Amino acid sequence: MKLPRTPVREQAPQVRSTNFEEVCYGYNQQEAVLEAARCLQCKKPGCVTQCPVSIQIPQFIEEVKKGDFATAAQIIAQDSSLPAVCGRVCPQETQCEGKCILGVKGESVAIGKLERFVADWAAANVNAAPSLPPANGKRVAIVGSGPAGLACASDLAKMGYEVKIFEALHKPGGVLEYGIPEFRLPKQKVVEHEIDNVKKLGVSIETNVVIGRTLTIDQLLDSEKFDAVFIGSGAGLPKFMNIAGENLNGVVSANEFLTRANLMKAYLAEYDTPIYVGKKVAVVGGGNVAMDAARTALRLGAEVSIVYRRSENELPARREEVHHAKEEGITFYMLTNPVEVLGTDKGWVRALRCLRMELGEPDASGRRSPIAIAGSEFEIDTDVVIMALGTSPNPLIKDTTKGLESNRYGCLVADNQGLTTRPGVFAGGDVVSGAATVILAMGAGRTSAKAIDQYLSPEKSAN
Image (cartoon, rainbow, N blue to C red; front, side, top):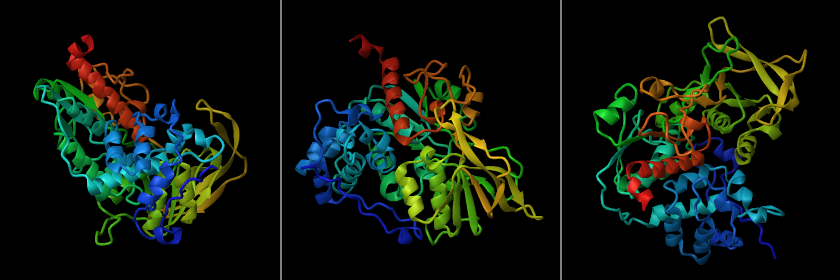
């Protein structure tokens, strides 16, 4: 008899659309054990090979099934420094769960929800200090405290390195802190707790340090005497459409909008955060960032629309996020492409002029290219336009570092181990790949940690 997937309790859409509390409640102990019992314990688990950080998924799930949550947490911790984050925001449906054998003819095991349960249980019940190896006398600097930097720092600290993270903003966490909304990723309960766990490994974090201005990579190596540097500064430079009217008051990037909402705590009623959303907001884009911006604007009191030039089948956002956005009442304008932002006499946004599209042949990425339909022009009334069109790395680090090369997209050039064109300097995550996911950035950070260890301790390879 096949057990159905254990449902996850959530806030009702009409309630959650008015608050910033977490949408999903997660599993309780009984639900977690019930869901874990569905795992077939495959001899060749595809879920593990599809996980960018290679968590021992069948093993931790087996411990959950037994009710031994402490051991499950220990198994996850061997490979992931941010389990409560990954359990919430990873695209499991295209990674671990996408390879679950149960998903072929039914529903895959809820691996992400089980990981979240174990992480939350450990946060509430485990306070033991981690055991650390003796210091090896070597120092590594990490640029950026996002998922790539935190993962790299954690693994290096566990190898005995002295690790220091430099963060440009006043709070560590990178995109976890400033990019993902509170209702998807609680800051104090999850992000701050996970970062504290990294600190317990001996990793130090210095904020308000802009590498390329406060210090350069060259200074970290030459003056500060670090033995190696890992760059995990992400991709925070927003892209725009370069259409008429983008300079009007009321046009913002999703990066700026979400950063203000998170770092200036717009999700707390007692904070007077200066974010203007007007009465109507149009979000241009179809990725996870677009969904995050749209659902944040909704919670700040606006009527919200998402404008995307392809069909719903091509939406790059997670299915869960699209489903939640629809449930909450957000309008979707599919096969719609903006061509101009229209303004008032005083320079504020009043509407978004668009063309209806149809899908033609696939483009280089394999998606069908949208083609404008002649004579289909129409306007969407709006006070604010949020551009969620992707990001690229800030060129500051590349421009201030000798021998560091980037490609035509502005991403740092690095080999598959993260080694850049500058000896001793490694890089990974969005600064190399362009905007991607939290778990892929973590995987890149872990890969570079191993490469840094081999670079600084070649005798290990020889043995």
